[in-house]
Amino acid sequence: MTRPGTDEGDLESLLRDLDVVVWEADARSLAFRYLSGAAERVLGRPASAWLADPGAFAAHLHPEDRSQVTAGLLRAAEGEPLDVQHRFLAPGDDVRWIRTIARRSERDGLPVVRGTCSDITESRTELDARADAEERFRKVVERLPAIVYLESVEKVRSDEHGSTVFGEPGSLLYVSPQLTDILGFSPETWIADPTA
Image (cartoon, rainbow, N blue to C red):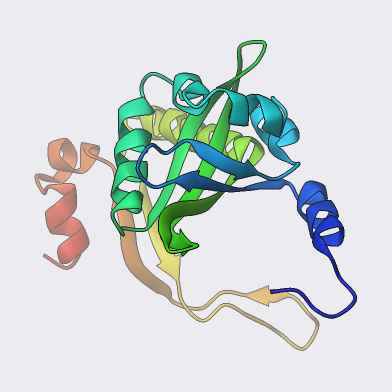
């Protein structure tokens, strides 16, 4: 739907400026029928290249993600919405993380799949780095000859001077496995009932 005073050129300019590829594909073959101008920025090739080669998108999916994404697109063509994060092989061996959203629709009475592709590489890289750091921290904690635990803090507030005031300790969130060797309780038992 367009507003008065707008035309397809304005819409195409808007879509080109977004960091999201808006696309439409044939529901039977999944061949692209349209890709917005952001295709080159997000997927590494201009829209015309993707339109000219119907198998190119699937060929550029990371081998470990290809079957999941193609199966999801096929299900989207049948009416099941798709929202998936996957790796994508851009030109120059550049691996990008892409979020693909798709759903079935109709154009001129024919079934199509419409969706978006957005580059989430930066946020995914940050998420993976945080998970790696947490894993390294967990390994260090679980090798210490002591019990380490994390507890939530209830009623965090600021006093009249703006200083943070912490309330009473809350529930246990984590207890290291050394608890079993030192006190004879499993971490799960201790978390469920720390007064046991």
